[in-house]
Image (tube, rainbow over all chains, first blue to last red):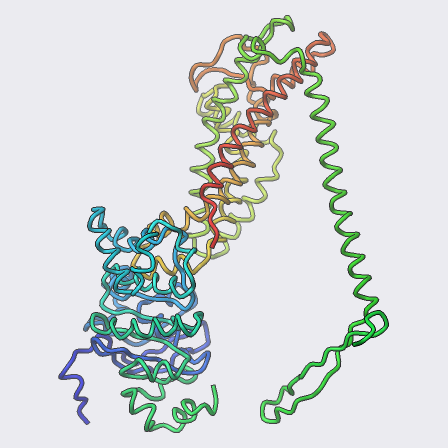
Amino acid sequence: MIDIDQYITKYVYDVKGLNLWYGDNQALKDINMHVMENEITAIIGPSGCGKSTFVKTLNRMIENVPIVKTEGEILYNGRNIFSSKMKVEELRTRVGMVFQKPNPFPKSIYENVVYGPKIHGVKDKKTLMEIAEQSLRGAALWDEVKDRLNDNAYGLSGGQQQRLCIARTMAVSPEVILMDEPTSALDPVATMRIEELMEDLKKEYTVIIVTHNMQQAARISDKTAFFLSGELIEFDKTNKIFANPSDKRTEDYITGRFG
Amino acid sequence: MRDRNTEDFVFEEEVYSMNEKIKKPVKSQVTFNKNRISRRIFLNNSAKHLFSLSTVFAMVVLGILLYQIVSGSIGWLDWQFLTSNLSIFPEKAGIKGAIIGTLFLMMIVIPVTLVLGVATAIYLEEYANEGRIQRLIKINISNLASVPSVIFGLLGLTVFSRMLSLGSSILAGGLTMSLLVLPIVVVAAQEALRSVPGFLREASYGMGADKWTTIWRVVLPVSIPGILTGAILAISRAIGETAPLVVLGIPTLIMKIPSGIMDDFTVMPIQIYYWTLDTVLTPEYAYLASATIVVLLVTLFVLNSVAIIIRNKFQKTF
């Protein structure tokens, strides 16, 4: 069967035979999947299935855990991210990440947003301010914070902090944004705002989102990958996965029989 | 309504069987005895008073000490005392040289310990691979903090005074004193770096920052309060320490005021030490010693206040 997607859009990520171990414990088993440009790919599965591990492997954040060992290839725009020529700093500049718990720096709102541009060498005050405004608008936060850009970011609500973190990620203008359960620490209203935001993000970025909320995956994503005990059970269009899954285990999970 | 004094509180709780398939609620009754609760409240109150008593004990001792010193210094601590050179006549004697010596010493000790101490801590916490050698270094740094200061004096005498021919200069004394208080700063800075939450580092790495950028822009600003706490302890120790300087051969009587870091010098604790010794010959020296202690305490207080002000400026909640 020919995968028609391949001819319309290009693969941003092409994962080939990825295995990952924490010490002797295998957390990912022979993962093969791809991520399309300007799509939202949702990764679902029960706790401990390896979905967070997988998404953290995509920007090699997982290597901060010293005992991790990987095998296989992840091609990012055709380049293997594990190759010695690929610098993690460069990869992470192009692949931004939003974490489970909002993690702004204990600095002002403005300083948080311009952190990325600053470390990558932007010095001009005017440019920085433009980037800050653009990113905060992009993260639908500008109107709420424009009068208090110099206040500490920890004065914001949890949902605002998470949108600030999204703005901070956007300020580096990445190509891909990885999101590791970005709404699991937020209330329903804040969650809704972030989901609305994701629709807009899709136009500019490729988004990969880990979520344990199946409704969220169904609402926002184009493709869904279902992970179970470190294996990729099923990966398909979201409509297909939720309406007519081809694997029994996927069906059991999305109908709430376990997990 | 139940009679609160006689009845026990009863809480009902549903405990599910461990076997997931059965999910049969088992009812358990947890009973709390009213008497036990009042006994615990009593114990809590006793503990509170006991702890406050310990605090009072320390305060009383400190109070007596301060009273003795301050009352001894009255009449002797004046402008003339602060601005005069040493003299064998108690009425004419002043500690200008010792004050300047102490300040000069601190000018060496503070930057040297902060730079070396923080750099060491950054290496050990952030860069060094977790291994046997790193563990050995860490344990030994903690051990160093408990080595008697005379030993450090001997080390300074061998290395700085003799090998590097610095003699009994301010530089030799400052470096020796820096070695003495370095472990305090290293240990405090390590603690401070370790307490920076991982999610802040992750945020920085996630944007493509390298390790040093992350340390410089995120980790260090957050750990400054902890590092300064270590600095305060180190300054307090260095400013009052006598033994290593005695070993270095700091002269008893210095008439000349030091003007640079290569000059000979004396410091306030040494002055206190010798005046106390010579009380046998000239009883008034006791008052001079008291007055010097007051000046030493005030200097320490001023230096520490600066550190505390900087610390509070950086202290952030998150």
